Length: 386
Ligand SMILES: [Mg+2]
Image (tube, rainbow, N blue to C red; front, top):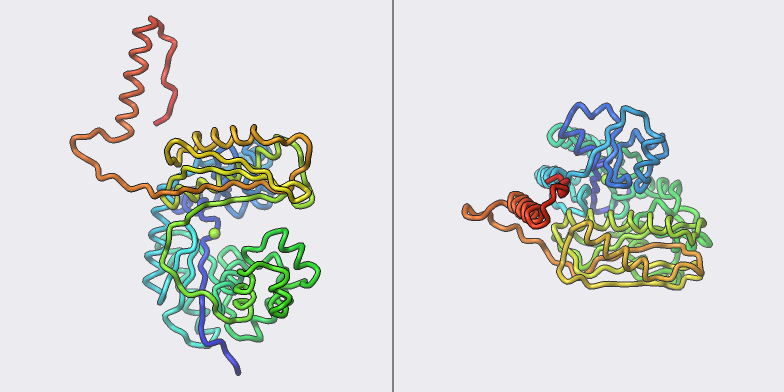
């Protein structure tokens, strides 16, 4: 029987942000969890039955969810700490490991036994170990290439395990999968492909010439990987040159400023989450809108200094948003991009320097005292939470 010569795995944490809070505070494990900041940033799987999606305004979410739901503000330090522990633990159990985002990683297994039952047994043990030590449920996929492994890890979420390493099994699964199950495929590409392909298997079977004519260069890589030919090797983690997030309205194109603003803010929030996770700051912000006629309206700004401060970024985006003429047409996509990125270097604390928080508090209190003295008034209060 023909077997693929190599195996690639993909591990993806299930509902990572919500799972981090449940791992940190066991009393939350049986509850619905929503991580929010104006909008829903993340939620536990149990909230899906109420129609809660990422980006739902928090007021709407509260109307839909039961009273006992836990609403939690994001705690990036906790997410980063658990992500680092997750990757460190994974590295101890696999041959090579490449972190792909805060909660997912590709790996090559230590044991390359070609039997699915053996691999299933090994990976079930890895899944249980991560759950026991880090407290986070994960889904794992094992296949002949990275793209296939990523598709398989998503196949039975949450707590899923799919090991498909024989060509006939891989083909059977690909025939069942719709095109949108392939990672990195946008709605526009889906529309192009709909003329030729119904399933992931159809895309894998397209001729080289057809793919070359229709799609971008990176689709050749994806087509090769769908056919079990590894096209990408493991790479050390590099800092990104830019961070982009977009949202497409599909058939519900809109000219409503409120809807456009809402989706733009969701994009900004998602892009900023990644910025914080990568411990980077941005100096250049660009927003795009694509019209129903596929014209692109964009506006950009270069800040006086690089930042990851959410209010500063939102304020800059609001000014850009106001500068775009939105009255005359309908839009199909919103998009935000952070570029001119630079890393934030952690500063060594000094015994002779006040910690940042105390220093801010001290400056604020001194200013308030000064204003009270100057204007002889007691109406200025500090209402900030440090
Ligand atoms: Mg995940």
